[in-house]
Length: 98
Image (tube, rainbow, N blue to C red; front, side, top):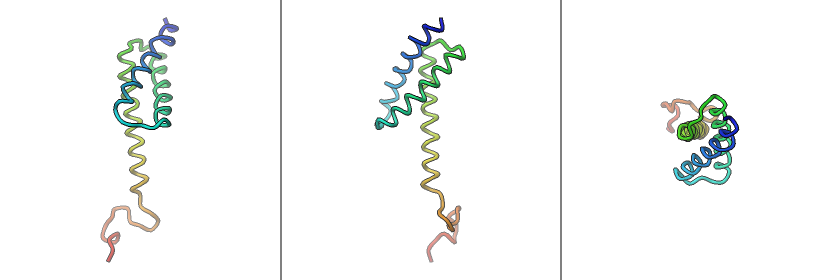
């Protein structure tokens, strides 16, 4: 049974989830490659843990990609909004120009 899951169900779930993920937003090739890698690892991990339902694998995979996307957006936001050296972090009165 594990062979069928690994050769048929998991790859089908990965393809279906990637098709849906690609429709969410315009992404460049590198983002799609990274998403496919993360999705593949996650879905095969789910299969190894006993999940055999393709629908559940697709949903779990999409949820994982959304979580990764949210974490990346948060990290990017923190990098672009972080204070430089000597600047106050809270944007308080000393951050305003005289």
